[in-house]
Amino acid sequence: MKRRTAILISGRGSNMVSLIEAAAAPGFPAEIALILSNRPDAGGLARAAAAGLATATIDHKAYPDRESFERALDEALTQAGIELVCLAGFMRVLTPWFVERWTGRMLNIHPSLLPAFRGTHTHERALAEGVLIHGCTVHFVVPELDAGPIVAQAAVRVLPGDTPETLGARVLAQEHVLYPQALRMVAGGLVRLENGRVVRALGGG
Ligand code: GRF
Image (tube, rainbow, N blue to C red; front, side, top):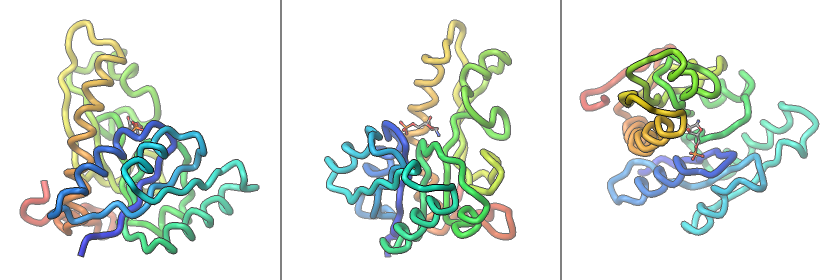
């Protein structure tokens, strides 16, 4: 049985597209059952609809507080029978209440080699620090921002003359490869979270 998976987005949704494309393969252990955006104008919504997928918008601005927004989010996921959640450029900080409900079942992709460069502007900061290796990370989501146990990482060499844009573009290309691999491992049961630590079966990276 394929695991019913939701992708949460706020923007253009290029990682979402890579997950949708990977999940279209017959043997892939997850099916993308819902695309949820907190922004009605997210470019990814049209791309998801064009792929024939169910989409929904839960506009955080329509809710008086974070908790009521998250209750609506949780209800939409539960109603759709969702088992796994992939955050893909989802720009809302989630409360411990929501994160704990989805512990071990919610992934995020971050454009750096965590634990380096949590937060935003990761490519600018990597260049400013002069690192030679940069990259991206897929991790289980925990209440602390960009801090969860690591499922998979991909490294990118920093090249002379790189700008945040050129470096970011090479990292993004790796994100599009890495996120489907990570979802395959988690949905297929090769990687799981146990007592706050990642447990890997043979073949789990
Ligand atoms: C990606 O760089 C991802 O790592 C970060 O937000 C960006 C989302 O891009 N979390 P996209 O919407 O998937 O194109």
